[in-house]
Structures are given as C-alpha cells and as structure tokens.
Image (cartoon, rainbow over all chains, first blue to last red; front, top):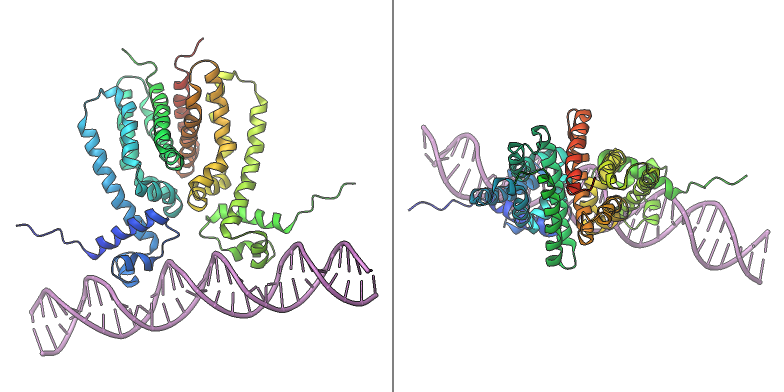
Length: 197
Length: 197
DNA sequence: GTTGACATCATACCTTCAGTATGTTGGATC
DNA sequence: GATCCAACATACTGAAGGTATGATGTCAAC
C-alpha cells in the first residue's frame, strides 16, 4: 500500500494560516497564533517562510490551487454551447469564488498585502484565464477583436469580484445572489449583441 | 476682508496622511510619521482620531470629497446624448479615478483596512452612483430593468476598478490606457444592444 | 485680574508583534 | 559513535499602536 502523503509541518502551517487569515483577516492574525494553531512555534514559521507576507502568499497559492482544481473541473464538464460559455461561465465563477477563504484572502487582503502586481500575477492563470478562455469563443465568432481579450477579461474579472463582495455584504445573500447573477447575465450577454442565430 | 479658512491641525494631519498613505500604503506608514510630517506628535493624532484606521478613514473621505467634486463637474458638463452617457462616462470615470491617491487608498487599501461593508458605503454615493445614474437612462429607454441597476452599477464599478489597476501596473501605461478604454467601450456599448436608432 | 475649567497637544510609558539570533534535538552518514 | 545538518524551540530586540498623564493656552465668570 502506498504511504500517506506525509502531511508536513509546512502543510499544517499553511492549513492553519488559511483558516485564521480567512476568518479574521491578515492584519488581525499574528504569526504566533498560526504557529500555535499548528502545534508549533514562531521558529518553525520563519524557517519555512521568509516573513509573514510570504506565509500569506503561500496560503493564497494553496487556496488558488483548490480554485484551479474546480475551474478545470467546470471547464471540462462542457455541455454548453461555446458562445454561451461567457454567460453560463459567470454562474460557475461565482459558485467557485463565493467562499470565505477566496473572498477574504484572494479578493480583499490580497491586493493590499501582496501588492497589485503580484496579486494580478496570481489571479491571471486562474480566474482571469477562465474568462479569457470564454472570450476566445467570441473572437472565433468574429464578435470581439483578439486585442481586447486580455483587458476585457481583466475587467470582467473585476466585476465578478465585486459581485461576490456584494453578495457577502448583503443582508439577504440569497436574494443578492439572484440579483447579481441577473445583472451578470445582462452584462455578458451584451457582448453577444451581434451574435449569429 | 474675510479671514482665511483657518487650516486646522486636523486638516494638516489629514493632508499628510493622504500624502504618506498614498505613497507607501497604509501598513508602511506609522502614526508618528504622519504626526511628524504635520509638525505635531502622536498625541495630536489620537486626540483628533480614534485610532490609525479612523485617521485613514478621514483621509479617504477627504480624497472622496475631491472625487465627488470632479464627478459633479463632469456630470454637469453634459453635451453627450443620455444613452451614450454610459459609454462616454467610462472615460470620464477613468480620468478621475486614475490618480495615485485614489488608487492606493480607495481601491487597494480601502477594502482591507476599512472592511468591505464600510468601504462600499463610502464608494456608493460617488463612483457607483455615477454609474447608476448613467444606467438610469437605459431604464428610461426600456433597455434595462430597474431592478438590475444597483447590482449592475456595482459590477461595472468593479470592472472600472480593475481597469485603473491594470493601467497602473502596465509597463506602458499609455498603451494600457487605450487598450482598457477600448475594452470599456465594448463592455458598456453591449448594454445598448437593443438600442433604438 | 485672578481663578477655574476645558480644549488641545506633548511626553512618557505599556504592550503587542514582526523579525533575528542562538540554542537544542533527532536522524542520517561515514 | 562521532559528526553534521535539517528542523524547530527559545530568548531577545526594536518598532509601532495605543494609553495615561502632564503641560499650555484660551476663555468665561466673578
């Protein structure tokens, strides 16, 4: 039988960092807390990571790895028409990104802690690439110039980010989710304006 | 002759806070630095403000007051057709929001420092309301259900935020600005799909 | 004009926390 | 079994947020 994946202390630190950072935010969590939660001390953290920001970055990458896993699963499922992917993809995007971990770490603290440039470098291969992929179908159909894909995908990413935050803040998340998804459809289906039948 | 507006120490603290926070980010600026830059000490800061976050909030409100001033000036100018306002308004929005102060304080540090809820409450009456106003013309023309205005304005706000960040990070901001503005037109003009001639 | 009260700010201090430096241990290697 | 190194604990330092208290000026009232 194969040996267990050997959960290292580094993995334990990252797991606790994900939990604490997503629950209380980056600034409200001390390095000692993360270490103690993992049954270790600060020495272990600063052996495994350069500083507190580096620990946060590693935790973000772990979260993003999970997101990527779900994104790949969603894109593989297929089923929908290529041109509709930009519309139906919005719903999938929300389903994946609407978690406390993604929200607090990747969307709220991320830009401020990691800096915009590093933050964008993290998001591009996952969330933004997913949108860009869907936009590619519009290019194929002649509905969108290729040169606009990158910027437009990034901007749609921004609107999706605010969509998740709007749901999180709403008094009635259920209603807000419906409201936001309807607006999302309006926004994305507008891109199909000159669409052929 | 009327007396000068009496620049108070509070105003000086806010002015220096705006400068330092926008240059180095919230976390990298100490309360002592802000006080010293204003020719005062920490005691003055903690008399005028509850804590460092409260100082940041006051500085953000001052920045937003300037933004509001420009927004009002832009909306008064008019000249464009009502339905086109959602398209041309995007360019105006970028012109106003594309400053280091707005970018670092209102768009990057804001959500993490103030919390999403308080941050949104600050943005709603200014940047988001401006977009919602333009969307109102689409409602009048029967191109958009009234119920979607709030959510859609918020989401467009999100895409504009990422647009400004994309320009700021780009190696060639000039080219990025053109690229982003083109994508912005694609996005907004899509909302005019069923537009009457 | 003296006194007292309050507003405004400086100074001194406390505590937390990020980061560092050094000590300790267990296992691999020869 | 002596050595060496990876992995972590412990002890320490400095910076910074926040507080408590003292100093100063101003104004009102008598």
